[in-house]
Image (cartoon, rainbow, N blue to C red; front, side):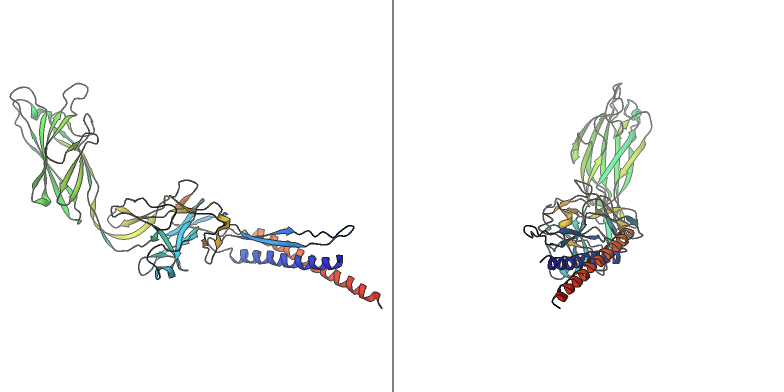
Length: 433
């Protein structure tokens, strides 16, 4: 019985070291594979009670595990859609095959890195057919709220290179100094005109005309102006008229004291803005809050547009996309403006090593991994999303070669045990002779 158990233990040792050799071979073979997670084999003893005064060899068994939570070093690349995760979390992907069979709720797989490039339809995917998924942004680049515990909101990231896009002007900040001398008794009351370019919803260049007419009193100073706003896209029609009164006190001299709406959108004293309805689209015109020295002022004797800030730009061609650390996919246009078109969430599970390993360095949710949650990159436990980056294999070749030597010696030793048992059984057989 004891000799037989020794033989079984030797065979178990051979099998265990063969399994360990297989993991080492896989690790070395994938030492240059981007995103590869090394595998390891652990040995566990088995005990068999041999009864009083006896001992039976139980041998050894193995368990294998892929260390998905280990991260390889990151390297820089020249492709903006080479993506890697710096820290915890994984990229949501699906397969190119699934795109042809469904239009929503795509099966989700996970990767920690990938070289994604647009195919003929603009879908970002790897050479092995792994498609990057994300949440689509609104037309204006803002992100709606999506559920975090389901794939329902995720869709393939699609980039239409050379696509035209407009960037309409939706906000304008106007800081103008009006001459205080023009609202004093005896002044000429000369109106002041200002023309500002803005871009409409169709990408056309339009003109917003602002006229400032002083109120000249019979005596003293009125410190009052009438601001009339006209829209060139509407044939010069007036879209708003407001009475501006300025403070004459020592502490707040020259700043806005009140704004009275004559026609058009109402003045919001909390934000210092006016909502205008233009032919080219709605526009928020900021003139400053009451008492704000950085908004509209009335000082000295000069008319000066101190600062005019606005968003919007002419129609442009999409030339490239870039991914920022928060996972936002930004479309870059040839005229200089950018717009968010997708957000790539990071998927996290309680036990990353419990994920089911698939081909092409991809993984799937399993009962051992636990349920997933979609985080904004950089929030919670997750790290950053890096463009122009790839994650190298987590294999340490020097360590694997050391393990290879140990495994070879252990295999030879177990083979020697089997050889020794064979010789002992041969001696036992010879007793009969």
